[in-house]
Length: 514
Length: 123
Image (tube, rainbow over all chains, first blue to last red; front, side, top):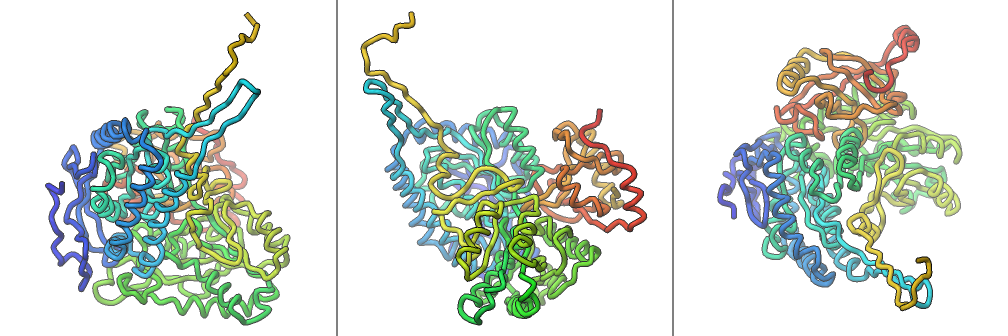
Protein backbone atom coordinates (compact mmCIF):
# COMPACT_ATOMS: atom_id res chain seq x y z
CA UNK A 1 0.00 0.00 0.00
CA UNK A 2 0.95 3.62 -0.20
CA UNK A 3 2.56 3.26 -3.59
CA UNK A 4 1.93 6.85 -4.55
CA UNK A 5 2.38 8.37 -1.12
CA UNK A 6 5.37 9.68 0.67
CA UNK A 7 6.07 11.51 3.88
CA UNK A 8 5.19 15.17 3.84
CA UNK A 9 8.04 17.66 3.79
CA UNK A 10 7.89 19.24 7.25
CA UNK A 11 7.95 22.74 5.76
CA UNK A 12 4.25 22.60 5.02
CA UNK A 13 3.27 21.81 8.61
CA UNK A 14 2.77 24.52 11.22
CA UNK A 15 6.14 25.22 12.86
CA UNK A 16 7.34 22.88 15.57
CA UNK A 17 4.87 20.09 14.93
CA UNK A 18 6.13 16.52 15.25
CA UNK A 19 3.73 13.83 14.12
CA UNK A 20 3.93 10.30 15.55
CA UNK A 21 1.92 9.21 12.50
CA UNK A 22 3.02 11.23 9.46
CA UNK A 23 0.62 13.05 7.20
CA UNK A 24 1.37 11.90 3.67
CA UNK A 25 1.97 14.39 0.93
CA UNK A 26 -0.72 12.70 -1.14
CA UNK A 27 -3.70 10.52 -0.30
CA UNK A 28 -5.31 8.12 -2.72
CA UNK A 29 -8.58 6.35 -2.07
CA UNK A 30 -8.80 3.41 0.31
CA UNK A 31 -10.40 0.51 -1.55
CA UNK A 32 -10.26 -3.19 -0.79
CA UNK A 33 -7.86 -2.70 2.11
CA UNK A 34 -5.22 -0.65 0.31
CA UNK A 35 -4.55 2.65 -1.35
CA UNK A 36 -5.89 2.97 -4.88
CA UNK A 37 -5.09 5.90 -7.15
CA UNK A 38 -8.11 7.73 -8.60
CA UNK A 39 -9.08 6.48 -12.06
CA UNK A 40 -8.53 9.85 -13.73
CA UNK A 41 -5.31 10.57 -11.85
CA UNK A 42 -6.58 13.87 -10.47
CA UNK A 43 -5.92 15.32 -7.01
CA UNK A 44 -6.97 18.44 -5.13
CA UNK A 45 -4.99 20.48 -2.65
CA UNK A 46 -6.04 20.26 0.98
CA UNK A 47 -5.03 23.22 3.19
CA UNK A 48 -4.73 23.28 6.96
CA UNK A 49 -7.10 25.86 8.46
CA UNK A 50 -4.45 26.65 11.08
CA UNK A 51 -2.30 28.56 8.61
CA UNK A 52 -4.36 28.42 5.41
CA UNK A 53 -1.33 26.82 3.75
CA UNK A 54 -1.33 23.62 1.65
CA UNK A 55 -1.11 20.43 3.69
CA UNK A 56 -1.42 17.56 1.23
CA UNK A 57 -3.00 16.41 -2.01
CA UNK A 58 -6.08 14.22 -1.98
CA UNK A 59 -7.71 12.03 -4.63
CA UNK A 60 -10.30 13.82 -6.73
CA UNK A 61 -12.46 10.80 -7.43
CA UNK A 62 -15.19 10.20 -9.99
CA UNK A 63 -17.86 7.59 -10.61
CA UNK A 64 -15.24 5.06 -11.77
CA UNK A 65 -13.70 5.13 -8.30
CA UNK A 66 -17.10 4.87 -6.63
CA UNK A 67 -17.83 1.79 -8.75
CA UNK A 68 -14.49 0.27 -7.81
CA UNK A 69 -15.19 0.87 -4.11
CA UNK A 70 -18.65 -0.66 -4.49
CA UNK A 71 -17.11 -3.70 -6.20
CA UNK A 72 -14.80 -4.15 -3.22
CA UNK A 73 -17.61 -3.64 -0.72
CA UNK A 74 -19.91 -6.14 -2.42
CA UNK A 75 -17.11 -8.69 -2.64
CA UNK A 76 -16.41 -8.29 1.08
CA UNK A 77 -20.12 -8.38 1.91
CA UNK A 78 -20.37 -12.02 0.80
CA UNK A 79 -18.62 -13.07 3.99
CA UNK A 80 -18.91 -10.01 6.28
CA UNK A 81 -22.72 -9.89 6.09
CA UNK A 82 -22.92 -13.34 7.66
CA UNK A 83 -20.19 -13.12 10.30
CA UNK A 84 -21.25 -13.66 13.87
CA UNK A 85 -22.04 -10.79 16.16
CA UNK A 86 -19.25 -11.94 18.45
CA UNK A 87 -16.71 -11.83 15.63
CA UNK A 88 -17.69 -8.31 14.61
CA UNK A 89 -17.80 -7.12 18.22
CA UNK A 90 -14.25 -8.34 18.72
CA UNK A 91 -13.13 -6.41 15.67
CA UNK A 92 -14.84 -3.23 16.87
CA UNK A 93 -13.19 -3.63 20.27
CA UNK A 94 -9.80 -4.08 18.64
CA UNK A 95 -10.39 -0.96 16.55
CA UNK A 96 -11.19 0.92 19.75
CA UNK A 97 -8.03 -0.37 21.43
CA UNK A 98 -5.88 0.58 18.45
CA UNK A 99 -7.35 4.07 18.36
CA UNK A 100 -6.79 4.43 22.09
CA UNK A 101 -3.15 3.41 21.74
CA UNK A 102 -2.75 6.10 19.07
CA UNK A 103 -5.08 8.69 20.53
CA UNK A 104 -2.62 11.56 20.61
CA UNK A 105 -1.28 10.89 17.11
CA UNK A 106 -4.72 10.82 15.50
CA UNK A 107 -5.92 13.77 17.59
CA UNK A 108 -2.99 15.79 16.25
CA UNK A 109 -3.83 14.93 12.66
CA UNK A 110 -7.48 15.82 13.23
CA UNK A 111 -6.51 19.19 14.68
CA UNK A 112 -4.19 19.98 11.77
CA UNK A 113 -6.78 18.96 9.19
CA UNK A 114 -9.84 20.56 10.80
CA UNK A 115 -8.42 23.46 12.83
CA UNK A 116 -10.14 22.52 16.09
CA UNK A 117 -8.13 22.82 19.33
CA UNK A 118 -5.97 19.87 20.33
CA UNK A 119 -7.63 20.14 23.76
CA UNK A 120 -10.92 19.08 22.17
CA UNK A 121 -9.62 16.34 19.89
CA UNK A 122 -7.74 14.83 22.85
CA UNK A 123 -10.61 15.14 25.34
CA UNK A 124 -13.67 14.76 23.15
CA UNK A 125 -13.40 13.67 19.51
CA UNK A 126 -11.08 10.72 20.03
CA UNK A 127 -12.34 9.42 23.41
CA UNK A 128 -15.92 9.61 22.13
CA UNK A 129 -15.01 7.77 18.93
CA UNK A 130 -13.22 5.06 20.90
CA UNK A 131 -16.17 4.64 23.23
CA UNK A 132 -18.55 4.52 20.27
CA UNK A 133 -16.85 1.45 18.82
CA UNK A 134 -16.97 -0.22 22.24
CA UNK A 135 -20.61 0.68 22.74
CA UNK A 136 -21.69 -0.89 19.47
CA UNK A 137 -19.45 -3.90 20.09
CA UNK A 138 -21.50 -4.44 23.25
CA UNK A 139 -24.84 -3.48 21.73
CA UNK A 140 -24.66 -5.96 18.88
CA UNK A 141 -23.89 -8.83 21.23
CA UNK A 142 -26.74 -7.87 23.53
CA UNK A 143 -29.23 -7.45 20.69
CA UNK A 144 -31.79 -10.20 20.38
CA UNK A 145 -34.42 -11.01 17.83
CA UNK A 146 -37.94 -11.91 18.82
CA UNK A 147 -40.19 -14.91 19.02
CA UNK A 148 -43.94 -14.43 19.01
CA UNK A 149 -46.12 -17.41 19.78
CA UNK A 150 -49.16 -16.71 17.60
CA UNK A 151 -50.90 -19.85 18.70
CA UNK A 152 -49.76 -23.15 20.07
CA UNK A 153 -48.52 -24.33 16.64
CA UNK A 154 -47.60 -21.06 14.92
CA UNK A 155 -44.53 -18.96 15.66
CA UNK A 156 -43.26 -15.66 14.24
CA UNK A 157 -39.47 -15.39 14.40
CA UNK A 158 -37.91 -11.97 13.94
CA UNK A 159 -34.29 -11.88 12.88
CA UNK A 160 -32.02 -8.89 12.38
CA UNK A 161 -30.14 -8.96 9.10
CA UNK A 162 -27.68 -6.43 7.67
CA UNK A 163 -28.79 -4.25 4.77
CA UNK A 164 -25.73 -5.23 2.74
CA UNK A 165 -23.61 -2.37 1.39
CA UNK A 166 -24.39 1.16 2.57
CA UNK A 167 -23.22 4.66 1.58
CA UNK A 168 -22.14 7.20 4.17
CA UNK A 169 -21.40 10.86 3.49
CA UNK A 170 -19.51 12.50 6.33
CA UNK A 171 -19.39 16.15 7.42
CA UNK A 172 -16.27 18.18 8.18
CA UNK A 173 -16.99 19.40 11.69
CA UNK A 174 -16.04 16.21 13.57
CA UNK A 175 -14.49 14.24 10.72
CA UNK A 176 -13.47 11.10 12.55
CA UNK A 177 -16.18 11.16 15.22
CA UNK A 178 -18.99 11.62 12.67
CA UNK A 179 -17.46 8.85 10.55
CA UNK A 180 -17.46 6.69 13.68
CA UNK A 181 -21.10 7.51 14.47
CA UNK A 182 -21.97 6.07 11.10
CA UNK A 183 -19.36 3.30 10.82
CA UNK A 184 -19.69 1.68 14.24
CA UNK A 185 -23.40 0.78 14.04
CA UNK A 186 -23.18 -0.12 10.34
CA UNK A 187 -20.27 -2.50 10.94
CA UNK A 188 -21.77 -3.91 14.13
CA UNK A 189 -24.93 -4.73 12.19
CA UNK A 190 -22.86 -6.55 9.55
CA UNK A 191 -22.85 -4.06 6.68
CA UNK A 192 -20.03 -3.11 4.36
CA UNK A 193 -19.51 0.57 3.73
CA UNK A 194 -18.43 3.02 1.05
CA UNK A 195 -17.68 6.27 2.79
CA UNK A 196 -17.17 9.73 1.29
CA UNK A 197 -15.40 12.13 3.66
CA UNK A 198 -15.93 15.88 3.40
CA UNK A 199 -13.47 17.46 0.98
CA UNK A 200 -12.55 20.00 3.67
CA UNK A 201 -11.31 17.32 6.08
CA UNK A 202 -10.07 14.26 4.22
CA UNK A 203 -7.02 13.23 6.24
CA UNK A 204 -7.89 11.73 9.64
CA UNK A 205 -10.06 8.98 8.16
CA UNK A 206 -7.12 7.90 6.01
CA UNK A 207 -4.80 7.73 9.01
CA UNK A 208 -7.52 5.72 10.73
CA UNK A 209 -7.90 3.26 7.83
CA UNK A 210 -4.15 2.70 7.72
CA UNK A 211 -4.09 2.20 11.47
CA UNK A 212 -6.72 -0.54 11.44
CA UNK A 213 -5.76 -2.12 8.11
CA UNK A 214 -4.64 -5.35 9.82
CA UNK A 215 -7.81 -5.56 11.94
CA UNK A 216 -10.66 -4.96 9.53
CA UNK A 217 -11.06 -7.41 6.62
CA UNK A 218 -10.34 -5.89 3.21
CA UNK A 219 -13.25 -4.19 1.49
CA UNK A 220 -15.48 -3.93 4.56
CA UNK A 221 -14.86 -0.17 4.69
CA UNK A 222 -13.84 1.73 1.56
CA UNK A 223 -13.10 5.44 1.43
CA UNK A 224 -13.61 7.47 -1.74
CA UNK A 225 -12.26 11.00 -1.56
CA UNK A 226 -13.28 13.94 -3.68
CA UNK A 227 -15.92 16.56 -4.30
CA UNK A 228 -19.60 16.13 -3.61
CA UNK A 229 -20.68 16.65 -7.18
CA UNK A 230 -18.06 14.27 -8.62
CA UNK A 231 -17.81 11.53 -5.97
CA UNK A 232 -20.63 12.00 -3.45
CA UNK A 233 -23.33 12.22 -6.06
CA UNK A 234 -22.59 8.97 -7.92
CA UNK A 235 -22.38 7.25 -4.55
CA UNK A 236 -25.75 8.62 -3.42
CA UNK A 237 -27.29 7.76 -6.80
CA UNK A 238 -25.93 4.24 -7.01
CA UNK A 239 -28.46 1.43 -7.26
CA UNK A 240 -25.84 -0.74 -5.57
CA UNK A 241 -26.24 0.77 -2.10
CA UNK A 242 -28.98 -0.31 0.26
CA UNK A 243 -29.07 2.90 2.25
CA UNK A 244 -27.59 6.39 2.33
CA UNK A 245 -26.62 8.17 5.55
CA UNK A 246 -25.88 11.87 5.25
CA UNK A 247 -25.05 14.73 7.58
CA UNK A 248 -25.14 18.20 6.06
CA UNK A 249 -27.63 20.83 5.00
CA UNK A 250 -31.21 20.87 3.81
CA UNK A 251 -30.93 21.30 0.05
CA UNK A 252 -28.44 18.47 -0.29
CA UNK A 253 -30.65 16.48 2.07
CA UNK A 254 -33.53 16.92 -0.36
CA UNK A 255 -31.34 15.92 -3.29
CA UNK A 256 -30.24 12.77 -1.47
CA UNK A 257 -33.85 11.87 -0.76
CA UNK A 258 -34.63 12.52 -4.42
CA UNK A 259 -31.89 10.12 -5.52
CA UNK A 260 -32.96 7.58 -2.90
CA UNK A 261 -36.53 7.75 -4.19
CA UNK A 262 -35.27 6.65 -7.61
CA UNK A 263 -33.76 3.55 -6.02
CA UNK A 264 -36.41 3.11 -3.32
CA UNK A 265 -33.87 2.92 -0.54
CA UNK A 266 -33.96 4.42 2.96
CA UNK A 267 -31.96 7.43 4.04
CA UNK A 268 -31.01 8.90 7.38
CA UNK A 269 -30.42 12.64 7.37
CA UNK A 270 -28.96 14.91 9.98
CA UNK A 271 -29.39 18.45 8.70
CA UNK A 272 -28.56 20.77 11.56
CA UNK A 273 -30.47 23.04 13.87
CA UNK A 274 -30.75 26.35 15.61
CA UNK A 275 -30.76 25.13 19.15
CA UNK A 276 -32.22 27.25 21.95
CA UNK A 277 -30.38 27.35 25.29
CA UNK A 278 -32.89 28.50 27.91
CA UNK A 279 -31.90 30.05 31.23
CA UNK A 280 -34.69 30.45 33.80
CA UNK A 281 -34.34 33.08 36.52
CA UNK A 282 -33.69 30.57 39.28
CA UNK A 283 -30.25 29.73 37.88
CA UNK A 284 -29.11 32.96 39.60
CA UNK A 285 -30.64 32.16 42.98
CA UNK A 286 -27.13 31.42 44.19
CA UNK A 287 -23.67 32.15 42.88
CA UNK A 288 -22.61 28.55 43.29
CA UNK A 289 -21.30 25.58 41.32
CA UNK A 290 -24.62 25.21 39.52
CA UNK A 291 -24.59 28.81 38.28
CA UNK A 292 -20.97 28.40 37.23
CA UNK A 293 -22.01 25.32 35.27
CA UNK A 294 -24.86 27.26 33.66
CA UNK A 295 -22.43 29.96 32.52
CA UNK A 296 -20.22 27.29 31.02
CA UNK A 297 -23.37 25.98 29.34
CA UNK A 298 -23.88 29.41 27.81
CA UNK A 299 -20.29 29.55 26.55
CA UNK A 300 -20.69 26.13 24.92
CA UNK A 301 -21.67 27.99 21.72
CA UNK A 302 -17.93 28.33 21.15
CA UNK A 303 -17.18 24.62 21.44
CA UNK A 304 -15.63 23.39 18.23
CA UNK A 305 -15.74 27.00 16.93
CA UNK A 306 -19.53 26.67 16.85
CA UNK A 307 -19.24 24.11 14.07
CA UNK A 308 -21.67 21.76 15.74
CA UNK A 309 -25.13 20.95 14.43
CA UNK A 310 -26.41 21.33 17.99
CA UNK A 311 -24.49 24.53 18.73
CA UNK A 312 -26.52 26.38 21.40
CA UNK A 313 -26.70 29.32 19.04
CA UNK A 314 -29.81 30.95 20.50
CA UNK A 315 -29.63 31.86 24.19
CA UNK A 316 -32.97 32.71 25.80
CA UNK A 317 -32.56 34.42 29.17
CA UNK A 318 -35.43 35.29 31.51
CA UNK A 319 -35.87 39.07 31.62
CA UNK A 320 -35.82 39.33 35.43
CA UNK A 321 -32.14 38.25 35.45
CA UNK A 322 -31.21 39.36 31.95
CA UNK A 323 -28.82 42.23 32.68
CA UNK A 324 -27.04 40.53 35.56
CA UNK A 325 -26.83 37.22 33.70
CA UNK A 326 -25.48 38.78 30.53
CA UNK A 327 -22.81 40.68 32.41
CA UNK A 328 -21.48 37.37 33.67
CA UNK A 329 -22.03 35.62 30.34
CA UNK A 330 -20.11 38.26 28.40
CA UNK A 331 -17.25 38.06 30.89
CA UNK A 332 -17.21 34.29 30.54
CA UNK A 333 -17.12 34.58 26.76
CA UNK A 334 -14.28 37.11 26.86
CA UNK A 335 -12.28 34.64 28.95
CA UNK A 336 -12.24 32.16 26.06
CA UNK A 337 -8.62 31.62 25.04
CA UNK A 338 -8.18 32.01 21.29
CA UNK A 339 -5.07 30.96 19.47
CA UNK A 340 -3.11 28.22 17.79
CA UNK A 341 -5.19 25.03 17.81
CA UNK A 342 -2.02 23.06 18.55
CA UNK A 343 -1.50 24.90 21.85
CA UNK A 344 -3.07 22.80 24.63
CA UNK A 345 -4.34 25.99 26.31
CA UNK A 346 -6.30 27.13 23.26
CA UNK A 347 -10.08 26.90 23.64
CA UNK A 348 -11.06 28.41 20.28
CA UNK A 349 -9.17 27.37 17.17
CA UNK A 350 -9.70 27.87 13.45
CA UNK A 351 -12.87 27.51 11.39
CA UNK A 352 -12.60 24.52 9.09
CA UNK A 353 -12.45 26.36 5.76
CA UNK A 354 -12.21 29.75 4.13
CA UNK A 355 -15.77 29.61 2.81
CA UNK A 356 -16.99 28.83 6.32
CA UNK A 357 -15.10 31.88 7.60
CA UNK A 358 -16.65 34.03 4.88
CA UNK A 359 -20.14 32.75 5.67
CA UNK A 360 -19.78 33.63 9.35
CA UNK A 361 -18.59 37.12 8.45
CA UNK A 362 -21.57 37.51 6.10
CA UNK A 363 -23.84 36.71 9.06
CA UNK A 364 -22.16 39.37 11.18
CA UNK A 365 -22.97 41.72 8.34
CA UNK A 366 -26.67 40.84 8.03
CA UNK A 367 -27.02 40.66 11.82
CA UNK A 368 -25.80 44.24 12.14
CA UNK A 369 -27.99 45.38 9.22
CA UNK A 370 -31.02 43.84 10.95
CA UNK A 371 -30.20 45.77 14.10
CA UNK A 372 -28.57 43.11 16.25
CA UNK A 373 -26.26 44.59 18.89
CA UNK A 374 -22.77 43.13 19.19
CA UNK A 375 -22.10 42.50 22.89
CA UNK A 376 -18.64 41.09 22.26
CA UNK A 377 -16.62 39.90 19.26
CA UNK A 378 -18.19 40.32 15.85
CA UNK A 379 -15.05 40.27 13.73
CA UNK A 380 -12.51 38.04 12.12
CA UNK A 381 -9.58 37.33 14.44
CA UNK A 382 -6.25 37.83 12.77
CA UNK A 383 -3.50 36.16 14.76
CA UNK A 384 0.15 37.05 14.43
CA UNK A 385 2.81 35.24 12.43
CA UNK A 386 2.13 32.00 10.60
CA UNK A 387 -1.50 31.94 11.78
CA UNK A 388 -2.26 35.22 10.01
CA UNK A 389 -3.74 33.47 6.96
CA UNK A 390 -5.70 30.94 9.05
CA UNK A 391 -9.47 31.01 9.40
CA UNK A 392 -10.20 32.54 12.82
CA UNK A 393 -13.27 34.30 14.23
CA UNK A 394 -13.78 36.07 17.56
CA UNK A 395 -16.28 34.46 19.96
CA UNK A 396 -19.33 36.61 19.44
CA UNK A 397 -22.54 37.46 21.25
CA UNK A 398 -25.30 39.18 19.28
CA UNK A 399 -28.36 40.63 21.03
CA UNK A 400 -31.62 40.87 19.13
CA UNK A 401 -34.96 39.16 18.57
CA UNK A 402 -35.99 35.77 17.28
CA UNK A 403 -37.18 36.94 13.84
CA UNK A 404 -33.70 38.04 12.82
CA UNK A 405 -31.81 35.87 10.34
CA UNK A 406 -29.05 35.34 12.92
CA UNK A 407 -31.68 33.70 15.15
CA UNK A 408 -33.15 31.57 12.40
CA UNK A 409 -30.25 30.17 10.41
CA UNK A 410 -27.36 28.07 11.52
CA UNK A 411 -24.24 30.24 11.31
CA UNK A 412 -21.92 27.38 12.24
CA UNK A 413 -19.48 29.73 13.92
CA UNK A 414 -18.63 30.76 17.49
CA UNK A 415 -21.67 33.01 17.54
CA UNK A 416 -24.65 33.09 19.90
CA UNK A 417 -27.74 35.23 19.39
CA UNK A 418 -29.30 36.29 22.68
CA UNK A 419 -32.80 37.42 23.51
CA UNK A 420 -34.93 37.66 26.64
CA UNK A 421 -38.23 36.01 27.56
CA UNK A 422 -40.93 36.85 30.10
CA UNK A 423 -42.16 33.52 31.39
CA UNK A 424 -42.43 29.81 30.68
CA UNK A 425 -44.92 30.19 27.83
CA UNK A 426 -42.88 32.93 26.19
CA UNK A 427 -39.72 30.83 26.44
CA UNK A 428 -41.44 27.83 24.89
CA UNK A 429 -42.91 29.90 22.05
CA UNK A 430 -39.52 31.37 21.17
CA UNK A 431 -37.72 28.04 21.55
CA UNK A 432 -40.09 26.33 19.11
CA UNK A 433 -40.23 29.24 16.65
CA UNK A 434 -37.62 27.72 14.36
CA UNK A 435 -37.53 25.49 11.30
CA UNK A 436 -35.27 23.07 13.10
CA UNK A 437 -35.42 20.77 16.09
CA UNK A 438 -32.15 19.00 16.69
CA UNK A 439 -30.96 20.12 20.12
CA UNK A 440 -31.98 22.35 22.99
CA UNK A 441 -30.60 23.30 26.39
CA UNK A 442 -32.54 23.96 29.53
CA UNK A 443 -31.29 25.40 32.83
CA UNK A 444 -33.37 25.61 35.99
CA UNK A 445 -33.17 24.49 39.62
CA UNK A 446 -36.84 23.49 39.46
CA UNK A 447 -37.35 19.88 38.39
CA UNK A 448 -40.95 20.44 37.34
CA UNK A 449 -40.04 23.34 35.09
CA UNK A 450 -37.28 21.24 33.56
CA UNK A 451 -39.52 18.29 32.93
CA UNK A 452 -42.42 20.22 31.42
CA UNK A 453 -40.22 22.40 29.24
CA UNK A 454 -38.05 19.46 28.18
CA UNK A 455 -41.08 17.54 26.97
CA UNK A 456 -42.64 20.56 25.25
CA UNK A 457 -39.64 21.65 23.20
CA UNK A 458 -39.79 20.16 19.72
CA UNK A 459 -36.24 18.90 19.47
CA UNK A 460 -34.69 15.46 19.45
CA UNK A 461 -32.20 16.11 22.25
CA UNK A 462 -32.95 18.37 25.23
CA UNK A 463 -29.92 18.79 27.43
CA UNK A 464 -31.22 19.54 30.89
CA UNK A 465 -28.81 21.30 33.22
CA UNK A 466 -25.97 20.27 30.91
CA UNK A 467 -24.97 20.80 27.30
CA UNK A 468 -22.86 19.21 24.56
CA UNK A 469 -22.62 15.77 26.13
CA UNK A 470 -22.52 13.05 23.46
CA UNK A 471 -22.61 9.65 25.09
CA UNK A 472 -23.03 6.71 22.72
CA UNK A 473 -25.94 5.47 24.81
CA UNK A 474 -28.28 8.45 24.14
CA UNK A 475 -30.27 8.86 20.92
CA UNK A 476 -29.40 11.84 18.75
CA UNK A 477 -31.46 13.21 15.88
CA UNK A 478 -33.84 15.86 14.75
CA UNK A 479 -37.44 16.95 14.64
CA UNK A 480 -38.80 19.13 11.83
CA UNK A 481 -36.25 20.18 9.17
CA UNK A 482 -33.34 18.82 11.22
CA UNK A 483 -33.70 15.52 9.43
CA UNK A 484 -34.87 12.00 10.00
CA UNK A 485 -33.63 8.98 11.83
CA UNK A 486 -31.41 8.82 14.86
CA UNK A 487 -27.73 8.24 15.53
CA UNK A 488 -26.14 6.80 18.65
CA UNK A 489 -27.91 4.41 21.00
CA UNK A 490 -28.74 0.77 20.29
CA UNK A 491 -31.76 1.94 18.28
CA UNK A 492 -29.31 3.11 15.62
CA UNK A 493 -28.83 -0.54 14.69
CA UNK A 494 -32.40 -0.48 13.32
CA UNK A 495 -31.29 1.98 10.65
CA UNK A 496 -28.71 -0.53 9.41
CA UNK A 497 -30.78 -3.70 9.63
CA UNK A 498 -33.55 -5.45 7.85
CA UNK A 499 -36.15 -7.35 9.81
CA UNK A 500 -36.63 -10.92 8.63
CA UNK A 501 -39.82 -12.45 9.80
CA UNK A 502 -40.11 -16.21 9.47
CA UNK A 503 -43.69 -17.21 10.04
CA UNK A 504 -43.67 -20.92 10.82
CA UNK A 505 -46.52 -23.34 11.25
CA UNK A 506 -45.70 -26.47 13.24
CA UNK A 507 -49.18 -27.87 12.63
CA UNK A 508 -49.63 -30.73 10.15
CA UNK A 509 -53.28 -29.69 9.62
CA UNK A 510 -54.42 -27.70 6.55
CA UNK A 511 -56.28 -24.41 6.98
CA UNK A 512 -59.34 -25.75 5.15
CA UNK A 513 -59.84 -22.96 2.57
CA UNK A 514 -59.16 -25.05 -0.53
CA UNK B 1 -31.78 38.67 -6.46
CA UNK B 2 -28.44 40.04 -7.44
CA UNK B 3 -25.09 38.55 -8.33
CA UNK B 4 -21.59 39.96 -8.21
CA UNK B 5 -19.57 40.19 -11.46
CA UNK B 6 -17.13 37.59 -10.07
CA UNK B 7 -19.91 35.13 -9.29
CA UNK B 8 -21.52 35.80 -12.68
CA UNK B 9 -18.24 34.85 -14.39
CA UNK B 10 -18.18 31.53 -12.53
CA UNK B 11 -21.85 30.97 -13.30
CA UNK B 12 -21.33 31.53 -17.03
CA UNK B 13 -18.42 29.10 -17.01
CA UNK B 14 -20.58 26.46 -15.30
CA UNK B 15 -23.44 27.06 -17.75
CA UNK B 16 -21.08 26.57 -20.68
CA UNK B 17 -20.01 23.24 -19.21
CA UNK B 18 -23.27 21.92 -17.77
CA UNK B 19 -26.07 23.65 -19.67
CA UNK B 20 -29.09 25.27 -17.97
CA UNK B 21 -28.65 25.72 -14.22
CA UNK B 22 -30.62 26.58 -11.10
CA UNK B 23 -29.83 27.75 -7.60
CA UNK B 24 -31.52 26.47 -4.47
CA UNK B 25 -30.81 28.36 -1.26
CA UNK B 26 -29.92 25.88 1.46
CA UNK B 27 -30.36 25.99 5.22
CA UNK B 28 -29.12 23.99 8.17
CA UNK B 29 -25.73 22.81 9.24
CA UNK B 30 -22.29 22.49 7.68
CA UNK B 31 -22.67 24.25 4.34
CA UNK B 32 -26.15 25.51 5.15
CA UNK B 33 -27.04 29.07 4.15
CA UNK B 34 -25.12 28.49 0.92
CA UNK B 35 -26.74 28.73 -2.49
CA UNK B 36 -26.50 25.35 -4.20
CA UNK B 37 -25.97 25.41 -7.96
CA UNK B 38 -27.19 22.40 -9.94
CA UNK B 39 -27.98 21.48 -13.53
CA UNK B 40 -31.55 22.69 -13.97
CA UNK B 41 -32.97 19.20 -14.34
CA UNK B 42 -30.94 17.71 -11.49
CA UNK B 43 -32.93 19.15 -8.61
CA UNK B 44 -36.65 18.60 -8.39
CA UNK B 45 -38.17 21.99 -7.58
CA UNK B 46 -40.94 21.39 -5.07
CA UNK B 47 -44.53 22.56 -5.40
CA UNK B 48 -44.05 24.99 -2.52
CA UNK B 49 -40.55 26.23 -3.35
CA UNK B 50 -40.44 29.96 -3.95
CA UNK B 51 -38.65 31.46 -6.94
CA UNK B 52 -36.81 34.49 -5.62
CA UNK B 53 -35.72 35.74 -9.03
CA UNK B 54 -33.08 35.11 -11.65
CA UNK B 55 -29.40 35.88 -11.93
CA UNK B 56 -27.79 35.65 -15.37
CA UNK B 57 -30.96 33.87 -16.48
CA UNK B 58 -30.54 31.24 -13.75
CA UNK B 59 -33.59 30.87 -11.47
CA UNK B 60 -33.02 31.01 -7.72
CA UNK B 61 -35.33 29.04 -5.43
CA UNK B 62 -35.77 28.75 -1.69
CA UNK B 63 -37.92 26.46 0.45
CA UNK B 64 -41.32 27.88 1.44
CA UNK B 65 -40.70 27.96 5.19
CA UNK B 66 -37.25 29.45 4.82
CA UNK B 67 -38.66 32.08 2.46
CA UNK B 68 -40.97 33.37 5.18
CA UNK B 69 -37.95 33.93 7.44
CA UNK B 70 -35.73 35.45 4.74
CA UNK B 71 -38.23 37.49 2.72
CA UNK B 72 -37.30 40.80 4.35
CA UNK B 73 -33.78 40.53 2.99
CA UNK B 74 -32.34 40.91 -0.49
CA UNK B 75 -29.87 38.23 -1.48
CA UNK B 76 -26.67 38.79 -3.39
CA UNK B 77 -24.82 35.77 -4.73
CA UNK B 78 -21.08 36.23 -4.41
CA UNK B 79 -18.19 33.84 -4.79
CA UNK B 80 -15.21 33.23 -2.47
CA UNK B 81 -12.23 30.89 -2.55
CA UNK B 82 -13.34 27.72 -0.86
CA UNK B 83 -14.00 24.08 -0.83
CA UNK B 84 -17.13 22.19 -1.41
CA UNK B 85 -20.68 22.32 -0.29
CA UNK B 86 -22.83 19.34 -0.97
CA UNK B 87 -23.19 18.64 -4.67
CA UNK B 88 -22.94 22.23 -5.86
CA UNK B 89 -21.23 22.43 -9.25
CA UNK B 90 -18.59 25.08 -8.55
CA UNK B 91 -16.66 23.19 -5.84
CA UNK B 92 -14.11 21.56 -8.19
CA UNK B 93 -13.10 25.07 -9.33
CA UNK B 94 -11.84 25.82 -5.82
CA UNK B 95 -14.52 28.44 -5.24
CA UNK B 96 -17.79 28.56 -3.39
CA UNK B 97 -20.91 30.61 -4.03
CA UNK B 98 -21.85 32.64 -0.96
CA UNK B 99 -25.11 34.41 -0.13
CA UNK B 100 -24.77 37.96 1.11
CA UNK B 101 -27.82 39.88 2.28
CA UNK B 102 -29.24 43.28 3.00
CA UNK B 103 -32.52 44.35 4.58
CA UNK B 104 -35.16 45.80 2.25
CA UNK B 105 -36.28 49.29 3.21
CA UNK B 106 -40.02 49.79 3.93
CA UNK B 107 -40.79 51.13 0.44
CA UNK B 108 -39.07 48.17 -1.23
CA UNK B 109 -40.84 45.75 1.09
CA UNK B 110 -44.22 47.31 0.34
CA UNK B 111 -43.52 47.02 -3.39
CA UNK B 112 -42.43 43.39 -2.99
CA UNK B 113 -45.49 42.55 -0.93
CA UNK B 114 -47.56 43.72 -3.88
CA UNK B 115 -45.81 41.35 -6.31
CA UNK B 116 -45.89 37.86 -4.84
CA UNK B 117 -43.21 35.54 -6.22
CA UNK B 118 -43.87 32.49 -8.31
CA UNK B 119 -44.43 29.34 -6.29
CA UNK B 120 -43.35 25.95 -7.58
CA UNK B 121 -41.47 24.86 -10.71
CA UNK B 122 -41.72 26.60 -14.06
CA UNK B 123 -44.71 25.52 -16.14
